[in-house]
Image (cartoon, rainbow over all chains, first blue to last red; front, side, top):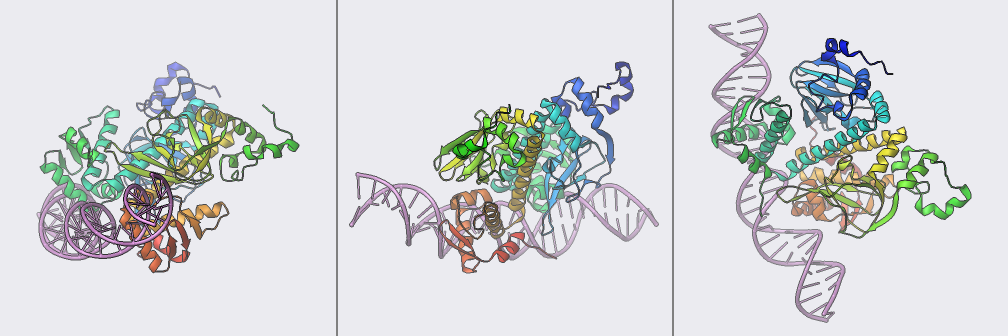
Length: 247
Length: 247
DNA sequence: TCGTGTGATTGATATGAGTCAATCGATCCG
DNA sequence: CGGATCGATTGACTCATATCAATCACACGA
């Protein structure tokens, strides 16, 4: 159990340990001290690679693992009985995918790589066991899951209360702050997803998304060339995202 | 630790133990054997009563406890920065409220009693500790939270993909199945919430809700007099709720 | 180099649900 | 009992966004 690796050998595995992962301050290790991190290291199945469009897991198949995004991006979606897809989330590096099926036996959603993506696979059975041993990890898991609930509630608010413009402003700002957390530019980035995905996620038609993008561009709020996005007027976007505030 | 109560004394406390709660097969005890249930009993703050309209907890106040609904009903909602309310869920007896704030320090939502409601208060600190000791409870908590995520995703689907009629049909059926779980009539019940709440929850105007109710009534799908609802044609409602299935 | 396909944009039109406004019904209370 | 209040219903009109349809633009393989 305490088979930790001597320090002087660590550099050789730096790429494949939570300790040295550049995302350790965003991901699960966030909750652990270095001793406990080794325990986590032992159960993580590192560096699984998926190409754009490949499924990481599929709705209604047995649920065995959660996945932490290391690089790239993932979308999750549920397929309704009537056959249409609703994207339920976008996941960026450092974020944990699959929590909507925790302690269930089948996946409640499908996860698909939006671009070439590497993930760490964390078998649930061992994750639960570990969480049982390490109170900090259990606490963190609860935290992540409740955050996921709040995110989803936030989406519900967007969908039921906000206009197309407000929804898109909100999405752009959400992405922005997530890039910022990773020390990347919060104002200039590449959208990992297609217009279609944005539309689906926000409950809009693709055409509407397109129109809003050009409108934003004309108003000088953003500069967009395909997936290359520059947020020019953050302030204005923030006001926009807040919606029709009537005092 | 093993201070279980002799069997012959149990009846005297039947009203205030998880063991003898009629909801034990729906609620947290579901995950526990009778020994462990006593541990839970010790930390639960039983029989807190709230009158209609009273807040069980309030958004942005310190988060200390989750609440299990014993009787009555609760709605949870988030208030956006722009000041409007979005109801995020209705909670019926046997259901756990407050999971969206687990392991956070402030409440992410407000919970309000829809009618005279009694709840069991479960302090989170002790709940986490207990979950740490009892793997079954931890597992169940993960399960409940992931279920909450799925519910919220389901709501997102409704809000972004379905018409007013489909949303209302879906809500009625959801309530129906929850009454059924409690061995109550799945076809004849009293709505715990006002039209206004339904509208808010489903992202509709009150007027629309009203119109759909009367339309359903005219089509012979339901019989409604105020909050008294009878589901006359379950089949048709189910087809309706599935939405525009195009084969 | 040229199709060919996929995703994005733009325009014209239709519609589901929101908004505004009036009425109704029930409950409450002086 | 009669006025007041609150929730629910119904009607008339409006509007944001979907839908339908065409074009555009870029990437890719032959």
